[in-house]
Length: 321
Image 1 (cartoon, one colour):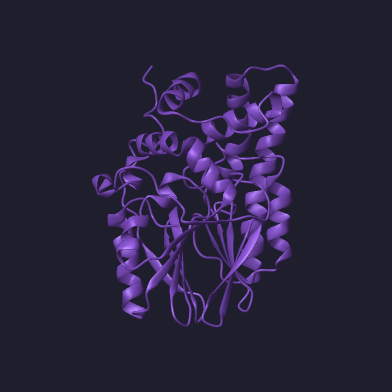
Image 2 (cartoon, rainbow, N blue to C red):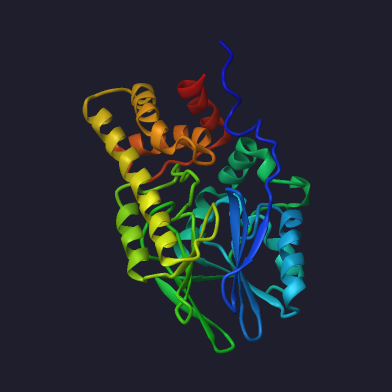
């Protein structure tokens, strides 16, 4: 019996990029389920939310920004610590970037597990790290951190960076333009794309999504998937993400409570979720990581354990080998 290719190592298909104007100030850089980048153009400066995975990939974002404005790209916001979101940061700093901003929780995660995460992610999904050699040595370090919330003024335009609760990670940060009711959610919300939950807090995530909904965003740029441009689409994105997280955790919790081992719970949960969510981007990729984390949380590990490249492979072999 041949084992499945590890994670998304065999995924080579290029995705089509869309650069979409959402308002006078907000743009979405999306790529058919690959990681998104948000762009906010203020009176005197530009803010980028999530950088793309490498400096070469970030150059494509910069090229599109430069087609519409010559204002300096001063701020880079990390919605969370994952490598695929942050390792392109050096390209913006070379463009005159002044601050890389993250929650204190995100900073602490970079300290604790940034290098392990970098090695593990590049191994899992090489296509997402085009021109991996362009990434400078080391990690992307925030130059400014905050706790809870902060406002950045791009001239008269206020952007609020807010921690609405734990979900995808403990450091999740959203960027919110209150005057336009536009939200950049990072991976707290996905659309037609499977949430990766290997570093998640399943018990907290649904409440955090309720906190997102309470802002009443009219447009939302998810971590993956198309920009949501009406309140109805925003609602659908929130509901889909919430349903997936709850369905998966309920299935895993029931299996763990019945004393089943991880592999049995995985096979059961995969079969249960596949009809409803199997068509979502990266479903097969995420499920082993998601179920493993959910099983941990339902048993004895309140906090996510560090994924190393070695742990990745052992888990994959145990569940998919």
